Image (cartoon, rainbow, N blue to C red; front, side, top):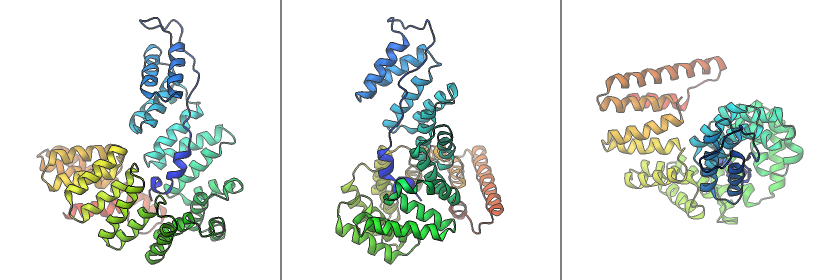
Length: 400
C-alpha cells in the first residue's frame, strides 16, 4: 500500500517545523563583518517570505561560520523539504540531530522525510521520539500510527490510533485507516465501529464512496470497488484520487486501455501529483508503449525524485533497448532509495554482468541472496505463510 496515495490530503496540511532561534559560537564573523545571529535572522525573514534561495544562502553562511549551529542545518533541511529534495533534507536534518539530539522539531521533520520517502520503518522511531518528549502532539501520534499501519504493524497502529477517536471520529481518512488496521489486527469490533462511523459521517458523499471503493479494492472485490468509485466520480467528476483508484481496479482486471484513460483523467485533474505519472508509466510498459512509458516515468521523477518504481521502470526500458549503462544509472538511483530490495540488487547484478563487470555483478547477486535469505528467516519466525512480492520478483528475474 502506498502512503502517498492514501494520505495526500493529510500530508498537504502538515506544517514543517522551523527553528526560529539558535545559539552561536562567539567570535565568528564573516569576511563582510556579518555575524551568525544577523545572518540567521535574515534567513528566517527570507524563509517566512517564501524566498527559499536567499534563505538557503543565509543559513549556509551561518553553518559555514558556525558548524555547530543545529538551527541552521535544521532550517536548511526545511528548505530542502519544501523543494521536495528529500535526500538533501535528510542529510541536513541528521546533522542537526547529531548536534542537538533533543530538538523535537528536527525529529518530527526527519520522520516526515522518511514518511514521504515511504520508509515507514525509519519514520516510526522519529515520530515515537516526538510523542514521548512532546506531550499533546496529536500530529505526531497520528503519523506514528500511520507509519505503523504502512509498515504492516497493524496491532501497533491500532493501539496508537484508537486513543485519537474523540478528536478524529469525524475524519474519513482516520476512520478508514483505523478500520483497516483493526480488521488486519483481528479486532473486528473496532473495525466494524470505525466503518459504521465512516458510513454515518460520509452519508453517501463522494468522499465516502472513494474510501469504500478503496477498501473494496484492498479486498480484491473489484466489482464492488468499481461500483463505489464510479459513484464517487458521478457525484464529483473532479474528485482527486477517484480516477486513480478506478485505474487500479481496471489494471487488476487487465483492462489496461481503460486503466490508461482513467489515469490520464486523474492527471488532467491533478497534473502535479507524481504517482499518477508513475502508475501511467507502468501501464504504458504493460501495453508495450516504451516511449510513452519513458515520458511518464520522467514526468513522475520531475515531480518527485524519490520514486523508486519510476527509476526501476526506466531501467527496464533502457535494458530492453540495450542501453545498459543508462539502465544501470537508473537502477543505482533505485537501490540508493531502497537498499534492502533483493530484486533491485539482482537486476543490478544482471546489468553489471552484461557490462562485463563480473566481480561487481557477483557482489550484487550475493547481496540479493543474502537479503532474500534474511527476509525468509524473518517470515518464518513471524509464522506468516507465503513469500514476499520482492522474493517472487527476484525469482522471476532469475528465470529471465
